[in-house]
Length: 222
Image (cartoon, rainbow, N blue to C red; front, top):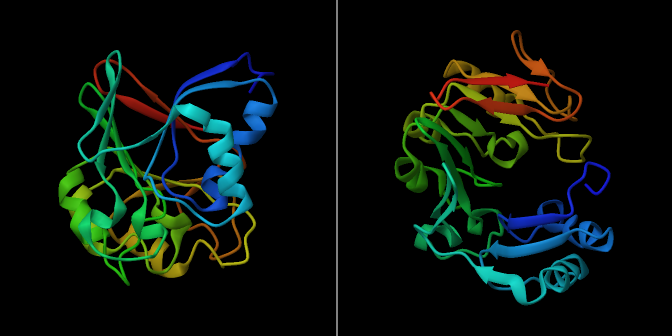
């Protein structure tokens, strides 16, 4: 990020404590990027990656609160829910933050690795999120995620699938089938290690950019 001219991050949100969601922050700090507030679900994890993350945050680490709003001028980031929405579970994916980013009439939900079975947190938090324009595909397109109840509740027009080479077979035919059945346009960061992209899916082979105008109109590009 220093090569891109970024030397400071005002707010960093870690949805949960898995390595693929917190593993880069210490590298950014080591590269000279300073960090303001570090928000996460609280608690701890018995991994070196988590210890490195905590060290990178330092005194800036804060536990996010349900309903908390971080304002970036005309853009707001709301913590819709976290820590399993009150359901008792030790499933790290179920414990993550669910964030809603809004700009005027535009809304984009970032649900981390939320899933819809064992336990089903998607059906609890989905109605709390409400209708959105764009959704990040939950849990990289696992077979237990992006359930019909979740998609019915949030009614996204576009979903962004963050995926790469993996040993889990993500994304799965089950998740993509539900997304397509709901008429969602899917943009992939990469092809992944699961089912092939469907007709109309866009594989960007890199970052996916969401550009939003003050009117609420938005565009998705690679």
